[in-house]
Amino acid sequence: MINAYLIHFTKLKDRLPSAKKALETIGLSTEVVTCWDGDALMMDALINNVNLQLWLEQTTKIAPILLQNAGYNASIFGGIFYGGLSVVEILKVIPNWMHPRPLGRGELSVILKHYYSLSRIAQGQDSHGLIAEDDIVLKTDSKKLFTKSLAELIECDGDYLDLAGGCKLRPSDLQGTRNITLVSPASTRTNACYIVSRRLAKLFVESYFPFVHPIDWHLLYLLSLHDVHKCYWCNEEVFIHGSESGKFTSWRSA
Image 1 (cartoon, helix red, strand yellow):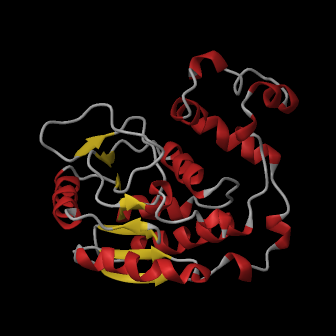
Image 2: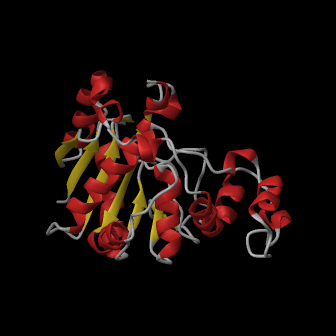
């Protein structure tokens, strides 16, 4: 059985018991990751600045997926990132939410906790590991769905599996009786809970820095950077994403 890493902001202590129980119920040994809490970070230089050029370079690789997921017809943006336009010209065309900005303390905290968790998986003995954030919510059939989905991922020799969904994104090509569907190009949903192979975790860790985006965009960038072909989403999610369902307030509001 694989190990799990539960990313937790200690200020939101009410979340921890239910999240731990959710992972224990599906049979996983869990390490709670509390290092690098946002309110303890002493990284003002990183918090207050943004690398404009790096932001645009990394956004170039993930822009089509970001725009598609947001409901845009990505083709209308053509080759704006590749056509020799200046930074000023690019910023006039892309939506405001894609504009470069510094990451907040909470965003830095989460991205560092994911890095720690990925490093543990990369250096471990298991073929895969699970990373969850502390707003996952157990379902009555979570254990059954998890067991089925993990077995299918291993059978497919898969590298990434989104378990908790989010953003109202669903697989577009359901595959028979399987509960996992291949997603191409490889893409994240919300990173509330996912399984990653040891080999992919190793690639992620070795190319993790420097980062400029929030965790979901950053992992999307890494999937694109390594041209991952074995990325899957669950058709029926193993867990409920608590922040999206309304059970929890997003940590961004904490």
